[in-house]
Image (cartoon, rainbow over all chains, first blue to last red; front, side, top):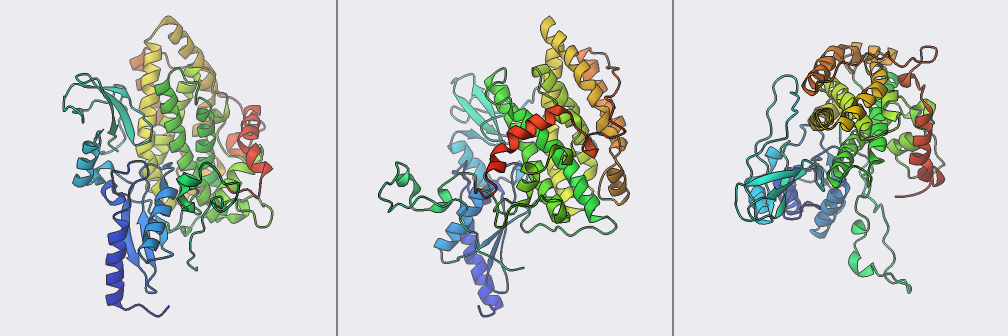
Length: 175
Length: 319
């Protein structure tokens, strides 16, 4: 491949980013990887090769490989074959990185969006009482909700129940 | 290093195959969707794995194995609760915690392999097994560096909770310090791990309190569990020679330096729960050797036999 000029690279980078930002999370398909805060960078090297960096939400996130495959395939379909997907481990993902659009999308699909992630100064404090959150039911809007389980079907979600409409729902945890 | 196009890890069945399959229509001819959870060929792809100055590569790799094996074996044990926990919520909680620990183990094993490839068991020519899997599935029990606490049987729910409380408290204290390691991978794994260990410890602490203040029977079981688990906790804070050297190099953490902080947290849980500080003596090593030296109980051999059997039967297998 001939050396890509700076102008070409910038155009290529724009194009690659436009594609990468449309790829959705395999487990929460109402969210793009960009809205989830998992898409960290889209770069183009001097040979015109696309390099995408993603970060896991949780260390054991089993969806990373699917995200990688989805990114590579989407870029290939858009005429950008052979993209490299890299893992970015630092800084560690925070639920604060979920965008406003992402939060609206979660709510529209019946999921409760996370509040602010806990800030930490000094040693991590032990908490022996159940986690308390002020959460409104994403279906009926009632503030009367109760925690069913701090752990849910994926690492990033807790289970709640609305005591007004009685519907169960998932809450994306603050981390 | 040359760039390469990622090969599909899971070839889809040929749709033109006369026999076909009921799943053909679901595939849409896209091999990348054949199996959910295909492996990332290199979990550290793009991560800076340069070995920091002043540390021996073998020491760094061995230290990574210690941290990885604690997580891997604890994860395997916790997974054994799947489908048999006291209720569905705890089943899911323990599986979630096991998954976090497995993720930490995978990165740490990959880091160990990158630091010193000579530690990775040899596999047949052309085997697609990645180095972190070779370390997990093809080492003998004597090559595992985990503390004995994590390998012992789950016992009843109380034993599992006490083991998890001790492990999570000690590991959290360690990773909080390790986040400033001069090794980029260890620092990143630690910083992320702190967030996860925080709720592992809270989960175990809450159940400890609940069992202690619950019924006579739950209290009896909790006290019995403490007596079983306590002799195993001291090993977490016994400094191994490798730990001493990596700590001196600014890469690792001497676990003895975390002992006081861990004791304070555990004392807090005991006080709130109205449980007396246990006094059982530490489980002895054999001729000075403990889990970090590769000296283990029979429980590890049995656990490994189950965990490794399929991988060992198919060293050329793709998953």
